Length: 129
Image (tube, rainbow, N blue to C red; front, side):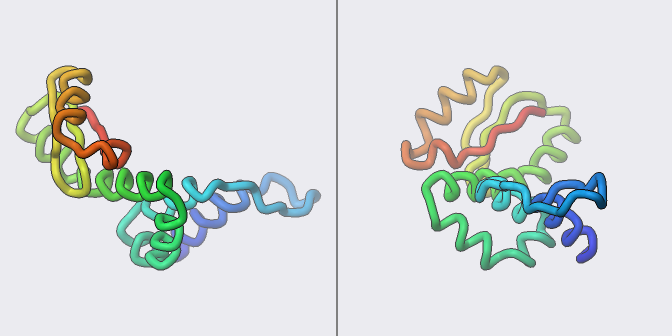
């Protein structure tokens, strides 16, 4: 698994090398892209935990991306359960909790605005089953 993680990190930072003729240049990857990459799996989160914390504290936007990715990981099991029980709709997750749902996206968005504190609105991860 460590080789796969190292490969993913190298691709994220350098891209895919297509020729040995040109020198390898580090591609420009945003802090948000790196944070989302580091949070892509439990294994990567464990490996890059210090870097994740450093990045998330560096700006409000990265803090929001951190919580979106955290909720995305937490929602994987929720999504499987909802599908298994044949529940269809739109769902919003904050941290590890479903905070809103609806048959239509606008129903869910209205609930989010009514329930979630304004300073956490951009932390919400949304998905459809």
